Image (cartoon, rainbow, N blue to C red; front, side, top):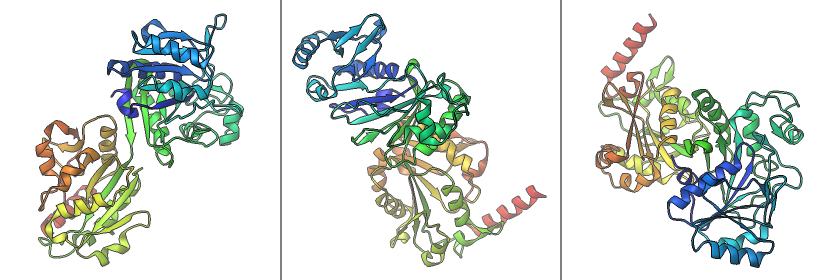
Length: 448
């Protein structure tokens, strides 16, 4: 996945990079992508950075005053798409001294996007800001707090962390203790840490330098608590040096469909028990154990009986038109979503064998793709739950009858990402009393 897509960059954005673990590399990687798309890009700093390398493809401008800077940047843009601006080149340190933060809005009028490194980390993978940091550019619209995965498991100290005493004060982690994923997440989303000084609308942290399966597992442990922070829109996992975003974590809502009348069953199947727990309670317990942005439970027939089974953390949506089929419940569920939900995972209440790992595999697959539909498969057959990106919600709203999302899947095959599952649980739902008895018998045989 491209960094520009994962960050959802818009023309006119002022992007501020803070933290440690590869800010400069990330800034120039993003600039290269935007230039490849035909954008005019200005990279700069409000502190100090290393000069651009030849592979960064940037034209360096040095200017001591704002009017001179604007004039020289404008001239450079006649022949260049990417300009790096500084006020001075400190030759002995091989560093560029940055520009005052108040210059940024005027400079931004000359280009499509301004990318700004807003603090320093002395080449450490992890940091927390001092009292005078960051130097946030005026008008910053997107904040990207960065940390390197190579900090995890290392002692909190000057070898791994810039300003370790500040990290200790923010998190309570003792100096010399091992840095954990939870500590990194806490610092990146702390109002006096990664979020300090930012008043814009969008925050997308980056967990950088992730190149192995083991590092990806650790990065996911950082991403999960960060997604619970109200200020965070997305979390990226990847390696800017490799021009790679491995996963783009987005807010996903779960919509549990429990409005059906169980006509073939003859009794509310959501109330049937397995190992002493109703099917609906089992599905909701599994769903609520995962980091969904929102859990909506759509009730219809038998709603008064099912309502006590819904945990307080879930949102109940009543479907008075449940007899019109599953499509009516899909629309009710979509109408209940908040604006930050970028996708919805539709979960049937009659799939009691669903495990949390199954739902996680679907989420991870979505985080790693730009396709709009994720469908689990087993043995060449497609099952449920199915995840749909927000861009497909308008199509889903047009579906009528009891077909669910199958029509949207059929109409947009290019958007479908199938995910192979290790068991047939994604194919098993309970529609008849015989299905239920077969399931009970199968469980008893397996336990025996």
